Image (tube, rainbow, N blue to C red):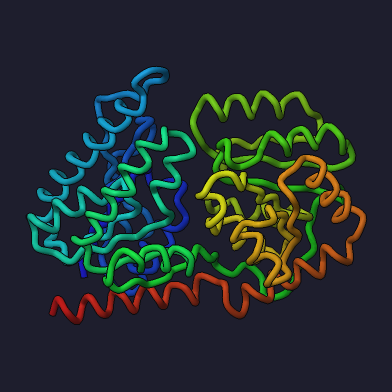
Amino acid sequence: MNVLMLVYNPFTNDPRVYNETRSLVQAGHEVTVIAFDREKQNLQRETWDGIQAIRLRTRLSPIQGFGWPFWNGLILLSWQWQAYRQAVLLHKEHHFNVIHCHDFDTLLAGVWLKQKLDLPLIYDAHEIFGYALATTFPSSIARVFLWFEKRLLAKVDSIVTVSEVLKKYFSSMTYKPISIVMNCKQLQNLEYQPPDNQGKFTIVYVGLLERTRTLFPLIHVADKLSDVHFIIGGIGKLDYVQTVKNECSKRRNITFLGRVPFDEVLPVTQKADAVFCMFDPADPISIIGMPNKLFEAMVCGRPIICTRGTYSGEFTEKEEIGLTVEYTEEALKQVIIQLRDDPALRERLGRNGLQAALTRYNWQSQKKNLLELYTDIETKVD
């Protein structure tokens, strides 16, 4: 089949979208991704591992201060309209068979395309979009998007999501079929490999750099543990990233990497003695999230540090792949000390994580669910 995917990022650091597109190409499908190059820094057309990427830009630039929620909404609508028009033009040449929308910020364009081209529509919900908005936008705006998402769900043919929690959430709103494709990673090693960090106990975080990621408590803990090496990297809003970078530069025991290409995330993770994955439990999105860090730590055989009382924390406790703590700097400091001083505990938890990845939580197992969905759609199309 000829697949059209829509994603509201530049398709440079999104491992989920890359894993799905690459798996579809390997299975014999053709995939075109229409993406959003907000920062205007990437190639507008590129073929990557057999995937055609088309990155669109808007003339509108983000603003700060009063009116920024409304302005960002205009940017979103502008991009979706461009994506819709670009897809209609491409369809005349490529004759797409299915539309695959990643997250709610592409769904409206997907619904327009379904109505225009009469094609099956897949909604790939990486998260509950309204919950994510509530971390930065007024709650009234988040509620509008939750309502609008529920309305648009009536137009989709299939839903893909990342966990049982999100499947339950969407099942309460629709009877459409729902598949789970977790954000598991490609296996790296079949046997446990100890970290190669020259004997310096190392904590790693590579991911989104944003407020809910508890980065500043981690940075403050670094002040109190001068014998521990911290590695922080990732992407986010430019002003916040710059603030994190500035704070890291004041500490001799923190290495700030900035943007880490997603094919280098696992090699960096393998240098760690433990992986940091604490989230603010006051945010609904943090309570139910299943972050990439969990699966990265597992395939690398590294213990993970999570917030107690979150879904990721419950998963960590159930699988015995790391330690969970209360959401305080002191609790974080104490759990780092515990792992630092107990190499046998670190290895046991790391081995548990690797074994879980080998047997259940790996991309090879998850892509079967994705390919089964596409086989079912292909059968109906034919």
